Amino acid sequence: MNLPGRARNGLNGVARELLRQPTVEKPRRQWVDDVVAWCHQHDIDLASRINSKALRFDAVLLAQINDVLESARLAPLGRSLSGLSSSAQAKEGLEEDKATRESPRARRVLVSFPPQPTTGLASEPRTIRDVDVLGLKLSAFGALVQVENLDSFYEFSPELLALSGYANPLVVYRGDSHYGGGFALLAEAWRKTHRPHIYAGDFDVKGVTLALDSNATHLLLPDIEWLTQNATSLHVPAEQFPYQRRLRKYLAALPSGHPLRDYLTLLLEKQRGLKQQWFGGEMVCVALG
Image (cartoon, rainbow, N blue to C red; front, side, top):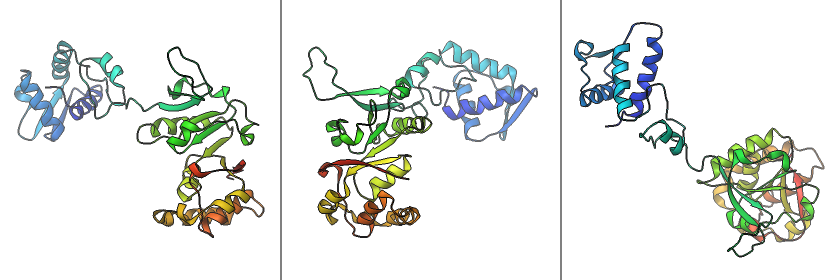
């Protein structure tokens, strides 16, 4: 029987309290009962320390618990497994805490790089790599391009006139349940560089809202003339209507003449949008603020 995570957390708290006093008494709540069951299973005699209402802890009892953990090759008290990857947990012992471990993709993002020929692999227009956010040297990139849709990400090329002013754009998939956490880490790190963050996604309420929530500085969209001719009410989902209020307030706060005003007016007043996969014409970067 592994020492349950909540029992370990409770014992770690007791260990800290024992640094200030010789004994600590805890009521028979769930984590304490977990400790009692674990001690009984491992033949640790609780003797006079226990009654129906509480368990009294002292340094001797914690030392006995640590001896059992050590003999079972489990992490000693004071070593939290929470937030560690499986490999990091393995270095602490044989115990695995799946409930609190770091997800294998917690720091991973999908990045699109220029072609990188690989022996045995057919050449492709772009090389897609799953990378650790911490392994990216952000100073090497002049702009971050966040692509909303996975199919558009696989086909996306930064060889656009709208992006020609940015040296070596970093093209990254926005993420989903698998990669969303890693992108959030990247977006926060990128915000501190004060360099452009360009959102390439659907021209609809959700797309613009996602751009704002990720601290993007620009939207990558077709020019307003082309978009006005091609946007359609069919690409304005009814389920997004409740979220229009926020964008209406954002539109009202924009200064007159701001280039984003025409786009938001088309989206909110004329109720016309367009999914990223249908974009055409000349692409432009439209400032969000």
